Amino acid sequence: MFNLSFKNMCLATVSKKLRAQVFDHRYEKASCHSLTVQHEFIKNASLSGGNLRQTRLFYSASSFHAELQKDTSRQTNVHASDYLQANDEDTQIVLSTSMKVYDNFISQEEEGSILNEIEPYLRRLRYETSHWDDAIHGYRETERKHWTEKNKQILQRVKDLAFPPGVAPLAYIHILDLQKTGYIKPHIDAVRFCGDTIAGLSLLSSCVMRLTHEKDEAKYADILLKRRSLYIMKNVARYDYKHEVLPEEKSVFKGTVIPKERRISVICRNEP
Image (cartoon, rainbow, N blue to C red; front, side, top):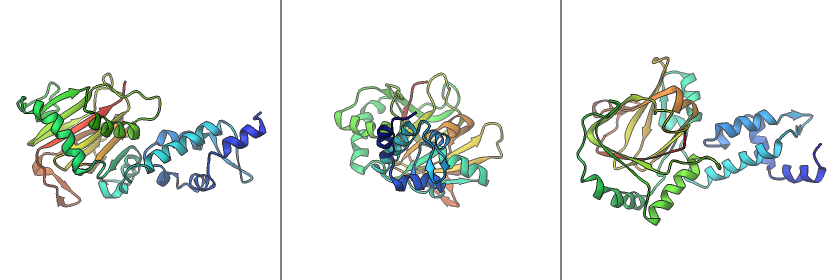
C-alpha cells in the first residue's frame, strides 16, 4: 500500500494535460520517440472511476514525462508522413513509431565544425568499391572516439535524444563517407556489434533510405533524410527491417527526385 503523501507527490509529477494526452490515445503525438516508455506507461496505468490505478505509476509516469520533455527541448521532428512513405498502412503505422527523423537537427555552422574535424583524415583514405559484408559500395569509413569540445557537445545532443538514461552508447562513433555514386545495399546491422538503436546525422547531402521487412519484402517504406537531419532507428525498424541508401538513379521520394551528392553520415549506436 502506498503512503498517501508519497503517492500524491508521485502523481504530482504528471500534469493533468499529460494524463489526458495518454488516456485519449494521443500519447503517440505527445512523445516523439520512446515507444518503450509509452507501452510501460499504458501497461501500468488505467482508468477506474476516473482515477489512475497506482501500480508502479510513479516510475512509468515520470519516465514518460522525462522522455516528453527531452524531445520537446530539441528540434521538433516533422510529422511521419512528411519523411516516411510506406506502401501499406500497417507498415506506415509500425515504422512511424520506430523510425524518427528530425530535420535541421544541426546548424550549417555545426555541420562545418564536424566536417573540419573529420575531413583531414578522410582525405587520406581512398574510396572502396565493396565492403567486407558486401553491404556498401563507393565508400570510405572510420571510427572516432575523441572529439573537440564543441563537436562533443553536438554529439551529446544526439545521444541524449537517442538513448534513454542507463543505456550505454558505444564509445566509438562510426563515420561513413559515401561518394556521389555510392550506395548501401539492404542489410540489418549485426546484433553482436550494437544494440537496439542507431542514430545518424546526415552531412553534405540528402538521400533516400529504404526499409524493407526482412521476412516480407512486399512491405517497405522510403525515408527522406535531408541534409543536417538526424534519424533514430530503433526496435522494430532496427531489428525487423533491412535498411539501405538508394543509389543516385533511384533517389526519389514521393515522385520527387532527391539530388544525391557525396554524403557523410555520423552514426551513434548503443552497446549490444
